Length: 447
Image 1 (cartoon, one colour):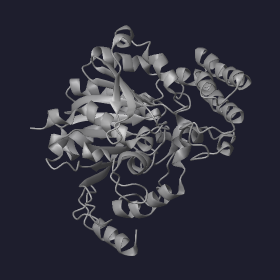
Image 2 (image 1 turned 135 degrees about the vertical axis):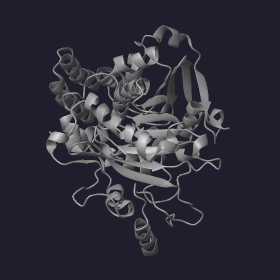
Image 3 (image 1 turned 90 degrees about the horizontal axis):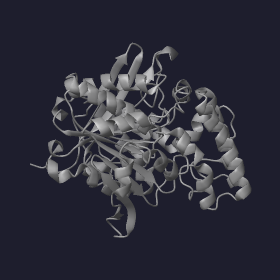
Image 4 (image 1 turned 45 degrees about the vertical axis):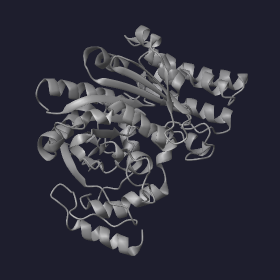
């Protein structure tokens, strides 16, 4: 952005509303009209402060006629306001250029830096970090209660969905269960319709045990490499069976080093993107397990943007808070809970609620490969019925070529997204947007 653009941004900060929204649109590129926005902190507990950033949909008929989608990043400790926003589905990319596949064409977007300590969210002391998905869900209930009941009551009747990625899916399962219960008990007024878990860490043992076959069928290891990887991940599974959760997390990190050494540094997030976003040296740093889950977040241009122009624009970030793509501290405090599954929660929400439950998986993702995701999906209570459902192709809206498949039964759907890795909207934005349209079926919300 040129100096004039930066000046306009700083002037806009002076016109902030009480909750952080700005009165005049910022000037970015010609023909770009910045959407209406609001942002705020929520004090979820003493010493724990969660940040959210709301974008109103750009549809001509107005935000009341389309859904609200909350986006949760993975990690745990990955920043949704940074990565999900500027790298995947927000209105602008890291270079502040309009994104053609922004989800604002279909829904309003709510990015939350979750858990506390992630991105712009912060804690006053180490004791305020969360340690498991139950604590994460409790904090989110405070945030959503504040959002729907106090700061954004205009969204109470708007259909609400939670979309997530990676570890965000594990958090989303727990959050969705807590939110559904809060709505049923009358604590929160919210038109909650469903949730989607993208390349999500729902059953860590299934995701990890399928690395060897996935690598082998994609010619990334030979038989010898297959056996080495399989031996390593079997140790992870053994620790899980014994309930040695922290040891399982450590062994999971060590097993990635085995994968890297036997594949010449495969990219865990997209097996076709050699040398992009991560390097083998990251995987060899003994105590840097958190890097392995979200290494692509370590990008200088995004960090500079978030700690520079965006920080100035928001105007409410404390001086002692530095935005980071991935918080090592957040990951470390979740180490005991990291390898625990939440398949029982997903099964409960499919069986005992009317929520739409969606799983989507990128074809080129290794770290949460489709093979592993199918393993736990085919153990759900509705597995027999789901297997008999017809799988339908999804066509790319531009090329009209097959770019995915979907299979549904009752309130459960599975989307296979082709030409995409772990970060589906980043790799295949057209199909991700098409998937969103299919899920929320925007037309049924128009009056």
